[in-house]
Length: 109
Image (cartoon, rainbow, N blue to C red; front, side, top):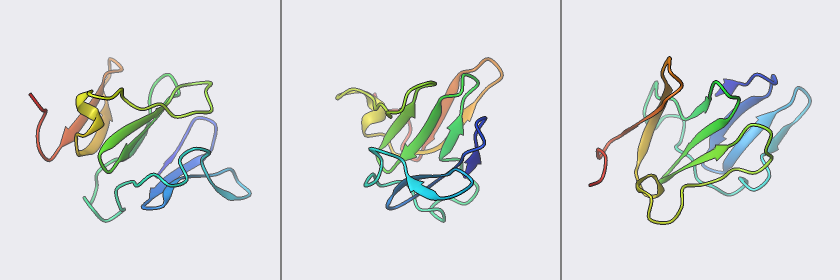
């Protein structure tokens, strides 16, 4: 769970990606039925990240979703991209703005 720079609270469940806007909890449009990692799957891991540009990254069961700054639609890696089937377990942004992923299986290839 995170609070983004627009004061929205983001959280995931096995029923989708949700936001709290201060008045109600809503499934994010287009993300109502995606499967995210359950909260207890890997204690202490990060599944939602706001990057330094204001984009939102979300870890799904076997994919990654990204909401670019200023957009209202999540995008996914193209077919055949390693992140399309990599079981990512955590996200991190370093000081230079690079996004890092950890996986229980390592990087394919």
